[in-house]
Image (tube, rainbow over all chains, first blue to last red; front, side, top):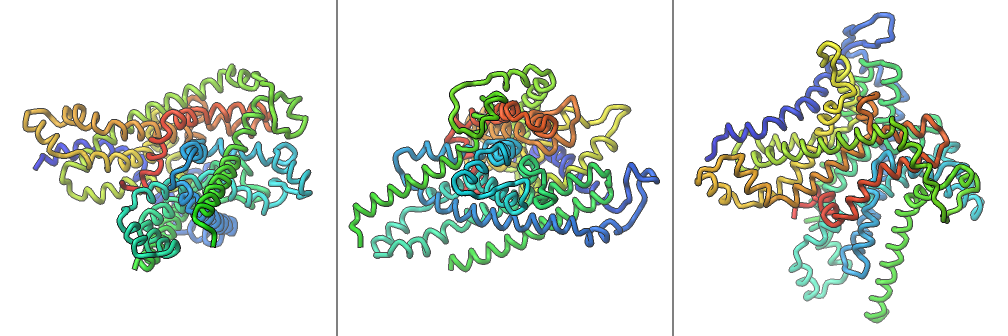
Length: 292
Length: 284
């Protein structure tokens, strides 16, 4: 066996850097969360506050509303992207003329900076300038305004996220579909199984691991969305599209409520972990049932 | 019951209809951004006409001749490139260690590394901001608004991603190859440089390119942890919206500049990037 000392030596720089930018901030946020700390307050410096920050947080209706909106957003986009991506993957897994061109176009949004995604959609949908509200009004007489109606803003953000991230689902599922073994499918054809049976008893269970991972990654990403929303609506109209990441960003920094912000960050992290853990268990359980 | 060839043709038609629709849906907003970036203010007043034949270069030239925005571009280049190089060197070393040595708790270390990629960045903004401005401070010097500060932070998502991608490839290289070299008296570093790097080159290239794109695209940390010296192009773009308000032409031009490297990489090494982007979910 090789000297483990060399192995640790190779691993050390990575562990040190990830410790510095990953673990230290985490411990620090736990620490700061127990203090009253506001650099504009009368009493400068950190004052120990116990769990007061957390007590306040549980009754902070703005924060809770932001959490609720994030959850709602997550459910909408993950469900739509999975359904759409699954369908598109079925169409893309087969070979047809022009397939790679369509795939490249489909993959485009994945390399666009989220902030530029927001800018693009802003130019496209802003009232009085973008073509979408203009033509919706001209052709269908629909009044569409992301700066006036909360529901329009929310729908547009969902649509933007579908635009941005469906390709990820499609492409992972295509990779999963093409990596499936051939024999079971050939055997099923010989046995006279129909399309639905092949899909239900072969494709779906065999694809479950990929589906679970994809869903999981999409859930985590949807929960932390900030940049695009900030560029498109700035959280508005009012606070109607202020998701939790944006809420932390907009509330903590201008107000310099550091202790409270730290508690908010930590609680959000806790919710994210618990939620994804529960969802992970739920998905793997239902996956097992489908497979059996 | 339709006959077989008919059903096949029908399926083909549906496939093309769906993909043409999807392509239009994908391209339309991006196309519109290009159109806006090519229009003068006067043209833009004419309403959202989708066809464009002229090109108003001033939208590009004006911000690009502004030293502030040129600085943002240079900063983005420095930060993305240094981060990609640093990440690649560290990831190759770390993945080699995880793959070839039996280290105590290496599975846990691998898993922990990956979880860093998943953490919501908004949660880490405040502690990193405080650490960078107040806690880690030597005299007047702090990590706030420095290139190195941002480069280090981008490791938090790029390093796990690169390790994740490389793990499969390096695991797939037969260990006998490097054992033979070790027996011949080569040291570990030589083995990594002479055997592992050439054999894993495609994966290394993909993860390098993707790390570069992710670093170039990042906004939230750059916006919070820089002010003047290390501002990046994405923060410049966001400033454009808030500061200039309705200078749509120049804003679109800046957005085009911001997305250009990504589009360029995608068109050059399309298939590899697609594999890389999805590799995390599919172990082949």
